Length: 332
Image (cartoon, rainbow, N blue to C red; front, side, top):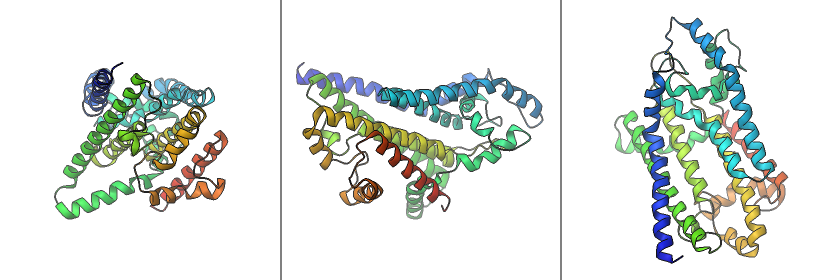
């Protein structure tokens, strides 16, 4: 295929994908919330028994969904079908969109997505589902150290520009979503161009600054949703539901694990060419060499190398970093 044709096709397809991502974030949740709001009852304060009955009817579905998610994630890694693992982790993170439903009953409207988290909520004590939700905040908010970069940016901008924090948070949320969509567009365009040209693996343009810019765009995009859940979402009285940094952290680490496993395949396929590319290009986030070395210190300390290159090493690495984040979060 001619280079110009390959570039045009890559740009058009990437633009469609990026617009779909942007629309599904900014507009689609509101559309679905309006549609589902007509089908799912909005139980108020005086309808606790009815709400409990409705939750009981959905409980089997919640456990079924969670079981299927876990199976998808495991099977994807076992059979090296990492898109399946990504799908499973994304579905686990999907209830994040439920925060677009500003309603009192936690399953009303698009909030019905929270049935995926229902098995986790029921681990906590309480005589009613509302008490369990309140107690479950200790799990949902575990890992809140991930808010530190946003909190620092928010603090600096508010001191410089002043003004209403709610307006600032809305602006920053939209900015994060827009930036992630642009990165996604650029990475898709580059990746598709290389695929259509059959020129090996992508290593130019945005791939010069990140070995996994598509995954980075998803990470940034999902972080924007996390920001929305805590700082932009305004629940009605009695409709509070704790933000979920715990589930975002799980999603992020599964994404990183997929990227690390894919790198082993790339090294096996391209050998020295990819090793050379990996040695001079940041893993996911375009950070300086110094910051990259600091982030890799635990790996170097344990495995005496920059990156884990075996499946068991990847599992151990992700487990160690995950536990570190949870422990640091207890002090945040």
